[in-house]
Image (tube, rainbow, N blue to C red):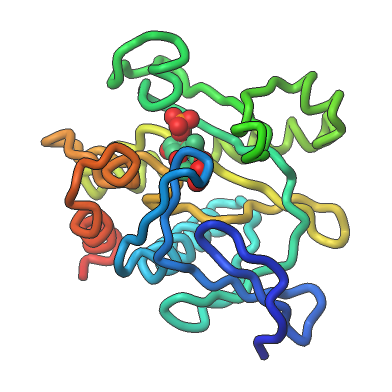
Length: 235
Ligand code: TMP
Ligand code: ASP
C-alpha cells in the first residue's frame, strides 16, 4: 500500500499509495518552532497528533465540514485524500495570545466579542508573513470564491471545536488550519488539528496544554499532550 516518500515536512512525512488520489501521512515526534530554528522531539507526539487530528476531522465531517480524512492505519499513519495545499495559514482566535498579543502590544487572555480571522503566507523563508485577502488575491494564492469558502469553513470549525473542547474543560484560545484542493478543485480541510496547531488552556487553572510549553520552554510538554489525549479519548 505505502509507496515512495513524496514529501517530508517538519512534523509529518507523506507517502504515495497505489491510488493517485490518496496518500499516507506519517506523524513524527519532531517538533520545531521559530520557523524551524528551534528543534526538538516530544516523545509520543506523532501518535497523539495522528489520533487526535483524525478524531477531530471526523467530528467536523459530521458537522458538514469536508476534510481530507479517509482512514486511520495505525498509531502514526493515516490515509488522506491527496490535495494541493493552499499556501495560506488560516488562523482563528477567540482570546489574545502569541503573535496577536506581541504584534498589537496587548496582554494574553483578552476574550474577544467575535473570533478574529487572519491569513499568513505559508512560507518559512519569509517567516509566514501576515497578509490580507487582497494580498492573497494579488499573489494568486487563492481565488475570491476560495477565500470566502475558507473563511466560512474556518469559522464553522471554530464553533464546533470551541464547544467540543469546553465540554472537556478546555478553552480553545486559537488555532491554525490549512486547506487543500482535490483533483476536481474542491476545497477540503487538510493538514492536522492537534496541540501543535491549537492553543488549549485548562478552563479552571489556565494551564497551557499545547505546544506553547515547547515554544516557551515551560517544561511538562509530554504531560500536556498526554493530558489532552486523556480528555479527548477518556483513556
Ligand atoms: P500565533 O499566535 O503564533 O500566530 O499562533 C496562532 C495559532 O496558530 C496557535 O494556535 C499556534 C498555531 N500555529 C501553528 O500551527 N503553526 C505556526 O507556525 C504558528 C506560528 C502558529
Ligand atoms: N511550525 C512552526 C515552525 O516550525 C512552529 C510553531 O508552531 O510555532 O517554525
